[in-house]
Length: 141
Ligand code: AMP
Figure: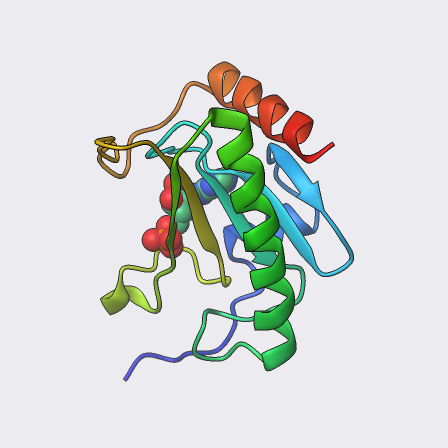
């Protein structure tokens, strides 16, 4: 059985501490949203709680409640920003469940009818991602 404790050196913890950069689109006292660097759809972003937890399995009711409110807010924003007809939310738990970064996060992916998600693991163009982030910030304003 792997250890399931929170690793404070995971990459999203480093983003929260400002140790590595991120293209942020939304922030409040409890949550942060930033662009995924390997976008599977235009506007693909991640929503995380600011407080530590590995995933859904160890999250507190408060962490889940606040992060889901932000997920809903960002879902409306990406639909508006990209003229999307729907939104896909993805969330993975532990390596066997597909999780690669061990700080709770929700993927928000705007979709149009017939759209296929791009394959995972392909680095995005950071200028294009910055433009998409600006569209989302404008939709939130
Ligand atoms: P998963 O844990 O399977 O949900 O995958 C982690 C996600 O984080 C992937 O979609 C990666 O593209 C994304 N990711 C990894 N490092 C960064 C980073 N520094 N900034 C933004 N997104 C990242």
